[in-house]
Length: 238
Image (cartoon, rainbow, N blue to C red; front, side):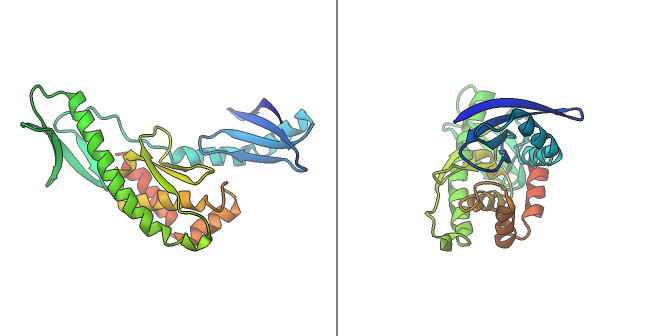
């Protein structure tokens, strides 16, 4: 298999793409969730023909890249100081430090109370909050996956194994082996938005790419997915 790279200028933008020559008869252009553009071309395909095809699809490529870019986390930078607001399941809570004999985090009315013994610090508060969010994420995501899986269990594919970690550029992903990974930070979003991300990724069990079949299935199992996606973007940008 031969691999090469190319660049196409479209307006004020540069579209960089990678070419993989494989044993196939037709040329296919794919845009991945991280905005990478990949061309799967027949063996010995002419480079100029590939460039022409990429230029022809440039508007579509940019729309796909914009779509995936809108799906990236955009949460503002947090400093973990008292008075700062943090979210959990779509609601905003004011962070409050308090000295105590034991470390801990709890919701109390409109506050996220972080208990810290000794000399409290922002790094200590950050560590405690991230640990608390992870614990909540494991609980919430597991329950939401069970509910969302009801729409997919008749597909005849194994239920994905759930993994949770902090990610900079994705809310979720599904590996080719069926491993579902969700961003810990997603637990700050409303439950309906969490369900959207999970459902989006589960649709990839049958449709690895964002082709017509993928969107048809997503429309069928979650007709209001677009509204949930917009809500996710709005809530997590606050």
